[in-house]
Amino acid sequence: MTKMKAVLCRAYGKPEVLQVTELDKPIPKEDELLVKIHATAVTASDCVIRGLNPPGGHKFPMKQLMKFGMRLFMGFSKPRNPILGLVFSGRIEATNKNIEILKEGDEVFGFTGISRGTYAEYKCVSAKEISSGEVFLKPKNASHADAAAVVYGGTLALHFMKNAAIKKGQKVLIYGASGAIGTAAIQIAKHHGAIVTAVCSERNFDLMASLGSTLMIDYTNKDARNELEEYDFILDAVGKNKTSDLKDACKNSLSPNGNYVSVDDGFLKIEPDYLPKLKASFEAGQLRAIIDRTYPLEDIVNAHEYVEKGHKKGNVVIHV
Ligand SMILES: NC(=O)c1ccc[n+]([C@@H]2O[C@H](COP(=O)([O-])OP(=O)(O)OC[C@H]3O[C@@H](n4cnc5c(N)ncnc54)[C@H](OP(=O)(O)O)[C@@H]3O)[C@@H](O)[C@H]2O)c1
Image: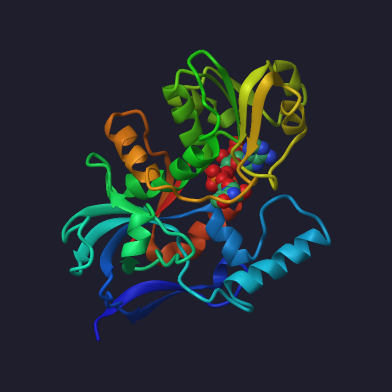
């Protein structure tokens, strides 16, 4: 049997629970195709799953209930699918007759649902996953690293901004603008003609301006609330575990018909048009991938340690 490199999550816990190993290369079933993965990314969600660390900013006893729910859903003592990883970019190595949309040799990118399994050299993707929008042709001008980076934050930003109906000239504030979702959200808002204010720490101001943000506010500055204006749309792009006095103040800075959305409100449901939209935006130069660091698959523990610190700029990519 041919082997592949993969990372197993042997238990819930610190990054050291991840182990690089060799597994049998998967064989696609009749309704599946086989993707050779070239790049994946370590996302905040991967750390949530590996560390059994629920998002949402909950405290005792809700946090414990959430952990219990996660165990029921994902596996009691370790993830049922022990290969983590939600995003990928790669090339189709084999297809079956039941899948006509994509063909052998196509370069694709994807955001898996609950199946995960992208910390590996190969992954099988089903016809259902393809038709529900989890896999699509990658942007032609994107490297595999770019495509793996842009798909997580881009998809989540599209999802949480889809009802915002941002119009030209409106004021939009992105809280936690320097993360994976935030860096995509700034670019999407800017493309719709919004005047964007980015909330991040000062060391990220230049990056925010380069993505199209007009104003930057440092959430670590005690007087930062004085810099707030009135906003038509506010996105909390880092979730409720990451907060500050400024975040509370932001909630009172909405215009009368303004809209406040947190990425921890509700769950992502990937729509079939998200990946095609990301591809088109990337190819048109409206969206670029922000890559903070890259690691080889063998360094997955270090990559998780870095992402878990909670201060990455944009994305951390893994070359497989
Ligand atoms: N609802 C869903 O279905 C769903 C799915 C996936 C993810 N999510 C949510 O999305 C989050 C991941 O977002 P992400 O990957 O874009 O974030 P991320 O990359 O983990 O965020 C990193 C950024 O957070 C900033 N940051 C850290 N503490 C902050 C604070 N107190 N206030 C403001 N910014 C702060 C850091 O900037 P500095 O270095 O400048 O501090 C850094 O640039 C998850 O944690 C989860 O809450 C939701």
